[in-house]
Each structure stands twice: as C-alpha cells, then as structure tokens.
Length: 124
Image (cartoon, rainbow, N blue to C red; front, top):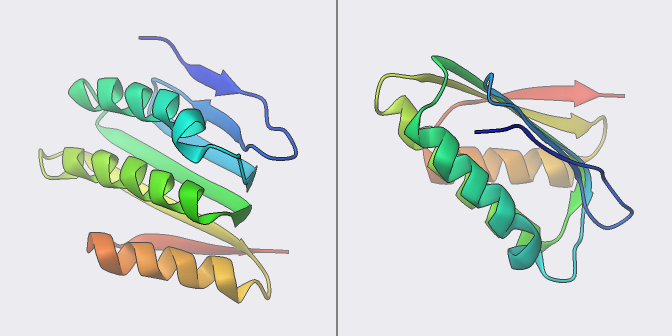
C-alpha cells in the first residue's frame, strides 16, 4: 500500500494519507461531485483499515465544506473509527478557525453522531 497525496485546488482539499497512520484533509471542500472526489479516498481508507498502524492520527482542517463533502468525510471518519473497536488507537483532530462556529458545530455534530471523542483545535 502506498501513501495518497492530492494537491488542493480552489474547490477540493489537499489530501495527505500516509501509511504511517497520519491522515490529513486540509483546505476547502466544495467539489461539484463529492462522491466522485471522495470515492478514491474512501477506497484508500478501506484498505488502510485492513492493516492499520497501532496509532492513527486524523487531522480534519477544513475552512469550509459543502453537504456532499460533509457526508463523505463523515463516512471516512466512521470507517476509521471501526479500527478502534479492534483495539487500535485513533485520534480525530478537528481544526476550526477562531470565530468559525459553523465548522466547530459540524465537528461537534460528527462527534455526537459517531459517539467518538474528537480533539477540537482552534486556529487563528
């Protein structure tokens, strides 16, 4: 299995998925077809979950995401959390800009749906 790295654009986030257990989605996520963009990422996550690292750090650093992206990111985090049920450690870091209540609330909503504790990090 190889790392997955995708450069961000004005509509899609930068993606760095590393087999060492560091998973990062950064930027803006408003692709026209979120399913098309995120299917490739989900496939990588699915394969990673078959043989994960003892510790997986997930960093979600989005300034904005549309509803299609939110659904896809929720699905990715949900899949990753399944490895915690198998005894692996997963830490979800949710970044939001100071004063951006929408992104903070989105993270809190995901945390409540998934019933899994996130670490919330306010940035300037």
